[in-house]
Image 1 (cartoon, rainbow, N blue to C red):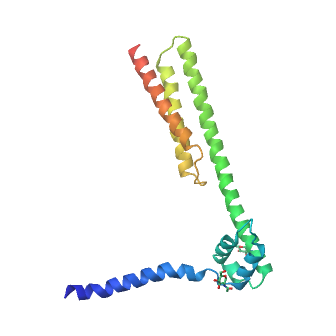
Image 2: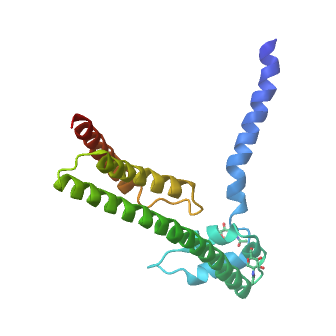
Amino acid sequence: MRSFMIQPVIATTLLLLVIAIVAPGLAVGTSPAINATCAAIDTPTYHEYDYCVRVLSADPAAAAATDARGVATAAVNITLQKAASTLSVISYLVDELSTCRGYYSGMVKSLAGVLVDFGAGRFDRAALAKAEFASDTPDNCDILLFQGSAKKNPIAQENTDNQELANIAREITDHVVNAS
Ligand SMILES: *[C@@H]1O[C@H](CO)[C@@H](O)[C@H](O)[C@H]1NC(C)=O
Ligand SMILES: *[C@@H]1O[C@H](CO)[C@@H](O)[C@H](O)[C@H]1NC(C)=O
């Protein structure tokens, strides 16, 4: 009895699944203007017909274009939007990396200061404070890039490497200072 109830549900689910798989395929290549324009720029060396049709068919303005000029306008505009978006990501990234540059500049100064202290025989709390300050830097940069608007972290590996080293350096300094 129960299986009779479930069967229509399974059939409906399968039908929706088939529609979901087939429908996107039907949407591609519906515009003769896109087809003709993409065929016109396709060459045996640079075979870009498929990419051309796919990217333009996904754009409402290109799909609505009725001639090559309309398709050209849409293609340039799609590229403009993409470039503007990339420009914005780069601008955020430059700002965020500039802040990280300040962090790392401070980290280098602190570690150099620790070495000056050590060189003068000062294995003390002041030296430890500098080592501790340095060990805050990599994570601060990483968090900034993680939470930033660019949503990119091109120095994730460097942050991790620096964090691991800075932790070791701070812990050993702590050990030496407390043993003194
Ligand atoms: C566009 O080209 C594809 C493949 O080349 C073809 O299947 C499709 O029917 C064409 N569509 C139009 C509207 O010309
Ligand atoms: C370019 O695309 C944007 C965003 O889709 C749209 O607002 C604008 O009207 C388009 N410009 C042209 C010249 O097609």
